[in-house]
Length: 441
Image (cartoon, rainbow, N blue to C red):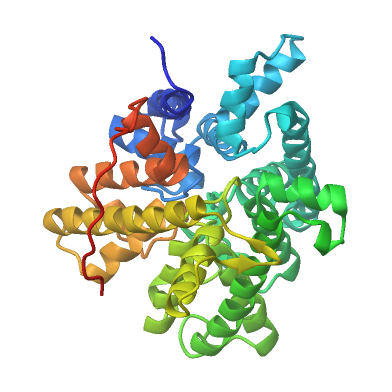
């Protein structure tokens, strides 16, 4: 079969999910030694591979060590990228990387230049392992005293990988099922380490390379890097202040001011794509819930382990609207000009992304007797590969679970990638159509 690079990427993710689901179905994967229902195993494998973190079972209490290691493997491969892992193995085996494989890596990793593929790929893998290793060392100092040496190190590695890959899957069921990191809500070392890993993993591989090459010289950065860093800083600043002010009498009730600032920062970071939580999502205030959904909708940055609409898309849409109201032809930004293709792609992605969310909410509302507020929250969390839940996901029936699995897959692979795969190699009709004006707005 002659497959396009886009279809190969999608099939690779699908094959990885199915393989993980088969392994998780086996009795050796569960603590009880019993078979896990195939759909439940598929849901877990999809959540891990798509670095989402939505779960039907508590990871610590349901899965055995083997099952947890399968999930950890899916997290790592899903986060860094299937093609990146395969290529690194090929390089270790001294196998030559051909042109078609380089093009495939370039597309799957979001790399612009074909000549930079292999060098940048090495930096991606080495950088990921380095950051995860540093995070694991720091976390082990906090986990080992309470869990023991080996369990503490194992938990440190698992949570460091999960945080860097923006997955949000945890092993904290020993402190209560689905408790996430609530037992460490007042621990600045754990919260700040996990938050730092989430931010670094969500910045994107191209941003890493740019910062590595130019250090702190902001003017030397590419336009993409400048946008990512600026929008990330603005979103974090606004959302930290928002959570601090909104949640004092709700999910942060009874906390001291320093603890509120710490949890506001952690919630701002993890809401955009990671899914770890130190707060009870069911106790969020209504404005706090809305702010969380907005952050989940926006997500992280392109070319990273994060999901969502992406920060660059958001900025292009906002600037496009501002430019239209000012009757300007082009969008200036950091002494550069955005291309018309980028503007069209951003607006198209926003329309399709919103349409998919509305369609999923409608379908699930037909099958589940839940409030629209709860369904919208779960749907945005799934397609944004965040993993937050108000506790209703395990209540979903067969149809709703299938919809959520599809949303997680679409959120990780990317809507543009999926549309390109479905479109195939069809060529656009070269005939020119006669233009005609219509009323807009």
